[in-house]
Image 1 (cartoon, helix red, strand yellow):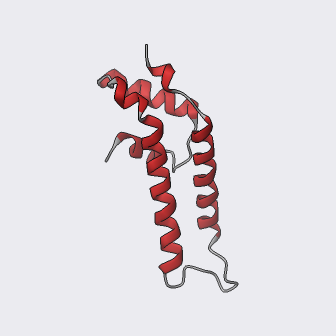
Image 2: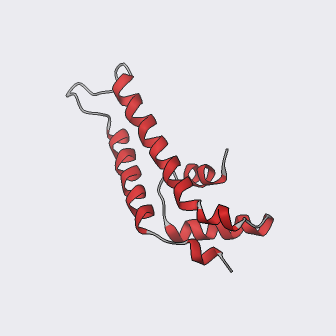
Amino acid sequence: MSWPKRFLDITEFAFDEPTFVEFVDAAQEAAYFEVAEIWLLKQMLLLVLFERFAERTGQTLHADGATAANGKAPEGHAVEMVRLIESIRKLSDSDFRLRFLR
C-alpha cells in the first residue's frame, strides 16, 4: 500500500493539510523523499481520492439492496461521498509542496 493511500485510509479519506504535513514530516524521519516524490504528492493523493470515489460509486450502482426502500443511498454512503468531494476540493486548493523542500 502506498503511503498516500495509507494516510487517506487512516483519516477515512478526509484530507486535512495540517494533519498531512505532520504525517509527511513523521514519514521523513524514517526516510527522506526525493524532490520528484514531493512534487507528485498532490497528484498521488488526488488519484487515491478519485479511485475511492469511483469505487464507492460503482458499489452503489451495482450492489443489490444498496438503496433504502425510498430509493436513496444509505446515510453512511452519502456522508462518505460528501467527505470525498470535500477532500478533493481541499486538496485541489492546497499547495503544501514547498513546506517539505527544506
